[in-house]
Image (cartoon, rainbow, N blue to C red; front, side):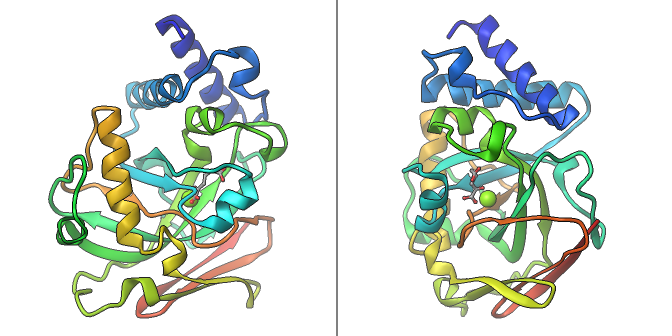
Length: 259
Ligand code: OOG
Ligand code: MG
């Protein structure tokens, strides 16, 4: 795709986000859309947001669990960006302004030293300064939240909308991170449950994968940023009135009320 088309596609998707309006997939407008073009569209989207005052804060991994790949009928891990305006700071989650939001149980990392390219498990683990339970609110801009290709979802910043960040644990060396049980509750009832090993076999593998995927685009995981490792289970549709809770063994619980 030409750079003018990349810009146009980024603007088209941001307008859909801001107007909470579902739109046709990018690949129906630009059938030649490749994964490389899609990451350029994503990057352009972040640049536009920055010009409007948002700050980049980190990365999200997507489709790191088999359950998510099955749910979306797509087959490989992808990444997107997180910005400060996406953080939910209150105990209520306002669904106005979202199209068809869903919520996912995730593990969050605070990065203390840069990761670049292919790294070992030890290097990735040592780069983590804190871990927490986190929830991601995803909201595809595409009609029906389905039937999109990998480049489509990447261009749409991997459906990123908002995220809820838990209290971080900095002393996690004795934690069997992949053995943490994650339970997502709606109105007090467990609706999804999985071990953190569902995230790429181990959440740290997801971080290693992220570093490698970023290198293809000439990017890295800088010190100080945050990372969402990807959902451990399928996403759950959000509706006003629900109380959503995420319990993860050994990590502080998260609870919000959707309005
Ligand atoms: C893509 C984003 C997936 C995750 O954690 O797997 C994602 C989508 O499902 O629309 O954020
Ligand atoms: Mg996610």
